[in-house]
Amino acid sequence: MKYKYQSECIDDYCRTVILGTANKLDGIRCPRCNGPVLTEPYKPKPAQVSERGLLVKRKILERNLDFCKGATPDQVDTILKIGDEYHESKSNLKDIKCQINPETKKASNRIAEKLGLAGDNKTPLLKIELADINSVPTVIYKGEEIDKKIKVKFGWETDTFNQVNPTYLRIEHADLDSDTPSTMRIQYNQPIDSGDYTVVYADGMPIKVVEK
Image (tube, rainbow, N blue to C red):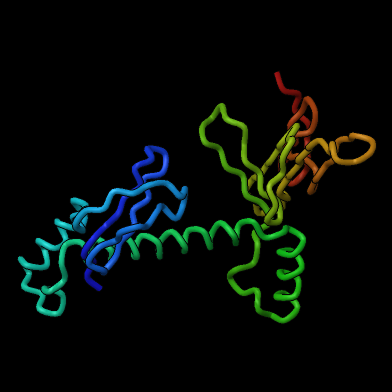
């Protein structure tokens, strides 16, 4: 459709533009504010093309890509914007996956385990991350992040030919959601170091050496 005339509202706060194919747009008023309009020949706005669109168009010509050589720079720009929207929608989908209710996630994991579908996607028991040596550790236990942490202890020592050293884990965190705020604890096994002494084995027999 080719427009012949355009009428623009003269109100500075409105500035609505009406396009028409008739010879004249006499006797019309602004459909938004009902104010007077100024009619003049149609003046299409030049397409605003980004530097990226011009760059891609130049590359198309340099590589002599016949199947898209006829695309104008503004058409290339539109295609690039659609590509950006696609990548943004994928990113939003990842955000939605991260917002899944933890209870729903745990239930789906249990079902997958019973059906033998968990495979390599089984949730690890524990993850501890440190941004730097002085930062607060991020602790993820059974797929859920532990917040309001008070104490995090983890101990691992290689087994010997006559001694099995179980992995030690102790996490204490505050529970402020209950009626009576309390401290919650997650613990596996006993620490390798006990109190003010270290358990050392000599000839298969445990001895206690007081730390200095």
